[in-house]
Length: 444
Ligand code: NDP
Image (cartoon, rainbow, N blue to C red; front, top):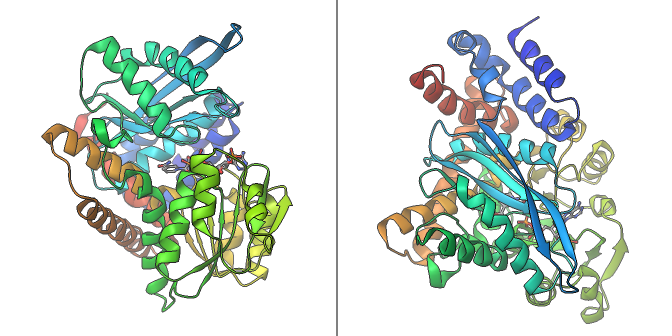
């Protein structure tokens, strides 16, 4: 049995009830094969066995009181996966589906993403099965305060710096930071995605969506394609989706669809983003409200139908495993030529195979959505220097980082004989830096 198969079987045996984690590990290990075969020092040092086992997993009870005076209990967690190239860094997700498998898959992916960013940050992820939807601001605040009352013991600006993810935006980061500050009496950059009045970075809100489009633009330009007049479908209507739409529209693309977890809207004349922002960012409403203001648009219940809309470019920006084999086939059949993952692992292994087999330009999330964590790292730099850069400065740095990530993916894929396979390219390029740092540190 070869080294990769042996390690994967071990991971399977040790984590039998963690399908998302196993899926992420399988995708990465399979694509590392050429790099592992050409570099026997990795096997000798047990790099893969160590990489698939988190440094530590912290799980804790989060008790809080709802507006009716009832005690509620959620489960909080933080998985600190690997800090070989810098302090742990990765978002916090608040969603009822959160479990250890999901947080581990996200933390594992984060190691490679953060390495690709070229910035000194390790991989981690955390969150809770708390559902902020339908909760009052005060309930969200009490939850966040209780969550941080445990988490603060394990984080620090030089140890672990969490950020937002699904269900964690400016409001939640504010409450978390307030509680951290109260508990530690320490005003330093222990969270990113902070508000601009207390150490946040300009362009952090836009970073993941903008970065995604910068990456896709690099990828398609090399093939003589352009975003101008391209028809684009974007799933989700959260932070990543909204700013991906904004940047794609700035490049002249026509975005015709967006979604939330209930259904999707189709506007053949092009989505009016200011209306979506009002609904989702200001009112925290549902995407179907769009058709009240734009009666010529359509609303469809259910999420997967969005992938049957003909488009040139698809940008899945909602959640994991939203494009399965069937959806991928529908996209290919309808003429889609490029897919850029804004969400983490939105395409199943089978869906990814469909894209690669059909020569679709496919940007894997760990590369194409690295803009958010990159600007988070820039926020850490600004906090350390007690400085704030302008929007243009940050955006320019983000643009360069995304170009550089694209080049790393392209070059690593070519080096190992997988031209245009950016899955292989991203995994190998992200892996090599971490693996070499681990080699340098000895067996720890
Ligand atoms: P938000 O919470 O802002 O938005 C998430 C969006 O996806 C919402 O429209 C939500 O709909 C929808 N959604 C959530 N769960 C599901 C589901 N199970 N099925 C269908 N739709 C769903 O999150 P973000 O925009 O921050 O994150 C989106 C994705 O991008 C995630 O995979 C995240 O890990 C990834 N990501 C985020 C980064 C960031 O900087 N924020 C950085 C890198 C990756 P509804 O409103 O109905 O819940």
